[in-house]
Length: 58
Image (cartoon, rainbow, N blue to C red; front, side):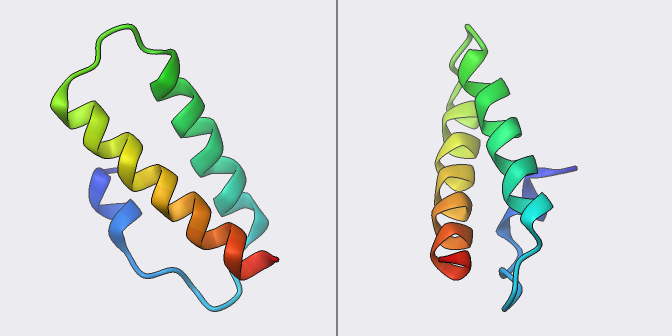
């Protein structure tokens, strides 16, 4: 999956697996020891997508 997949609009009723997958990806990135600007951007995007999905599922 590319970084562009995370920038797509969130569906009206997100699938629970989307949220799980994004959280797992963010957890793996946070475990990385090397923080590059690209990794930091991806983390920020993922955190935003997770928050968006959580609002839609609440």
